[in-house]
Length: 514
Ligand code: GLC
Picture 1 (cartoon, rainbow, N blue to C red):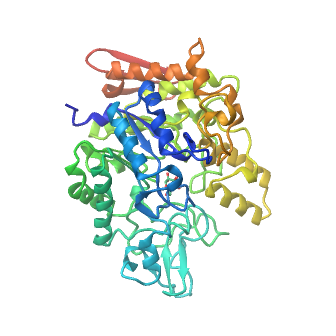
Picture 2 (picture 1 turned 90 degrees about the horizontal axis):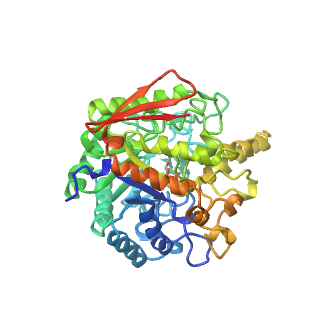
Picture 3 (picture 1 turned 120 degrees about the horizontal axis):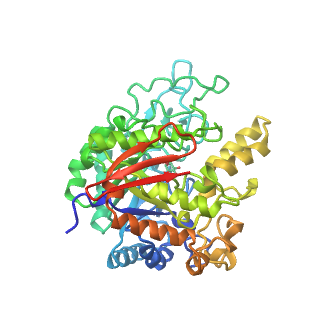
């Protein structure tokens, strides 16, 4: 029998399907590619795989813009391929978690097609008239640039999109919308999906009255940021309803909510206390320490180790005292490679990746590995404009260009922090395109693949990063104190060493990272 809180001890592996393994030669990864690699994941020591979205989508935001929640994106395969993948995963003891993207849909979704023509689903989205000056209802800037509001001539109203103009926000105030979301969840859970990673789930409630955001950039009519767009007063109510209506009928389902702008464990607690309504959140506070506050990720700020301790140490200590639980992640499809970002991807790439593995796997929380992290994948050393695929990077570059800004610097910032860095194809072997595809990859392959790939690291005689990760994961399993033991920081003020202890009835572990 599975423990009711099995999800605390587990190891999740995030797959970015389009870049994982292509079996058709179309240059994009697919579901059959994932199925073919399940034994590799089992052998690595992970227990849950989370797939970034595989639903029907125009792919403006790489699948985070869904046009049909019950269909598979045809380039990834068919529903039968999905069923086979899940069956095979379950057969070898892996669980499959899907991405639930329900703050917004694609503008191609039939719900929005109906809404924008004034049909019965109009109130499924968020509409406002012009303000007194004949402009947008407020100064909110969209995450990917421009205003959060898009004018619809036919309806003489704007619709709200916190992300891209092609991603209209659903109106969670409308109970019929919530029922439609619960139906989507039941559909996948009943088909055998083992839970959800919930995309920007704290965006489903906005500040009532939609007040203007604070002005941080007076040159710009639209203010960048999350304030008033995220963390509205109904987030917890909506999620409790989700628990009541859906999740409690699937007590083994895994749940993690992505929650940018949740600043402290105290703020997170109502959403995760003792695993209800969600088991854990992805906060972003450690990912923000190298950004200037209130600005986009492309605005670098130097940071100190004590700032990182302040974030992660405090989250873990608070959660342990108050019935909360952390998610441990250093990479995902929105963040650059951690060895390039926080450590050294040159001479010390091997040893830095191993140090980060220890740091990552001995924190208090559920462990999330991102594809390629287990072999120490790094950011490509440069990007040309033509090579970029991510709309956030492209819109940033074009905004710099439009202002006659320094486009070389823009490319440098993209190389440092842009999302395409972690979206390059998985490096399986030293064959053409790193063994990812026999066709033309949809995004460039990192040219270091001949030396840094799964096959080389599996067969090398020494202790490769891959072998090290396997060892770390095995150790974590064999020493539950590393997961559930008491967490205490050591030498908090030290700017060169990150140290802590984990203690349980069996003993004490001292972890020292430098
Ligand atoms: C989340 C996803 C990201 C996407 C955004 C909008 O942050 O992780 O990739 O662009 O939501 O859906």
